[in-house]
Image (cartoon, rainbow, N blue to C red; front, top):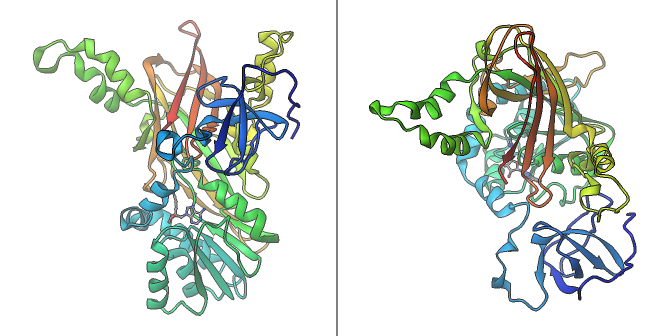
Length: 445
Ligand SMILES: N=C(N)NC/C=C/[C@H]1O[C@@H](n2cnc3c(N)ncnc32)[C@H](O)[C@@H]1O
């Protein structure tokens, strides 16, 4: 932690108390634990304040603090930044588990991974992180002969999972543990850490952070991660039906001119990504490309963060804005940003970008076949489907045009399960002048 020592005093600092723990994710931030008393010197933004704790100074998330002496009910920002009550509450009911179990492509892929590695799974110790109803753990017990499967589930579903494990005669092999995987005590390290953690755009909900923490704590050296790697795919696309339904609709409904509502429609329907979008392969303007790739053995929790440190430091007066921007971009973690260069293969309307993910499961046997789950338009549909990012205005493009730029996934520093997806693009065309654009999409805060 290279935060600077307190030098000059600003206005009289106010004393705040920490409502929950916070672990700094960049050298400009200050870690603290529940109950710590922090001196706030400067409320530099609504979300981040410049504060001091025992003589060390740095940025802290404002929503984690309450003015010392204020009453519990005074402050609406008591909310847990992980929103665990809501998140695990939703997994305590059947609705989401039914959706995931009904997703045959997803569930059969995990079964195929177990079947094709059944010999190597013999006598191994497995952790199934976020086991839900325990389906993957029971596949392990039914289709292979591991010595132990720790089925870890934080929600109240765990008690039902224990019953299912018993009901299906797996209790000899499967032990259900209720709690957050990163907080639980296991009696031993594991040989294999399997989890189905992927969210929309691969990372939404950031369950991946729990998987990495559990990996660092419980996966033995040389142990196997399933999935072993993950990739976010992107393609420029047409979305004519969505555009017609939400934007063109206002041109002449029932013979009337409703076009004054179109700016509202753009705000309401194009500001956030459209989840569960089913893109027709015909609507892809070219081949997709993997813009972000994660190696599940080496990616670190801090890599999931974008710490454009200079935005949090007080800007040293001597640094020019240009230099700041240059340095700021040097802070963006490589894992969360990807370049792309597309060559349009056919004339069409560039309405936006579509994203999806793939995950790979390496074989336990040297040289064995890797299994892949692909949630893209050329594979069997999954419950994730794809995610559509609509531009504000569609752009006519022609075969041979190039669309290049980058994507940046910026994790929300306060709401830890959320992120913003920023897209920057430039179209170089032989027929039209080149056009550039940029747009940020919150998911969801
Ligand atoms: N979104 C997709 N695909 N899968 C989400 C899968 C989520 C399941 O994993 C559990 N879970 C999530 N995080 C943890 C954790 N840190 N420790 C223990 N259980 C956890 C949830 O309660 C759901 O049952």
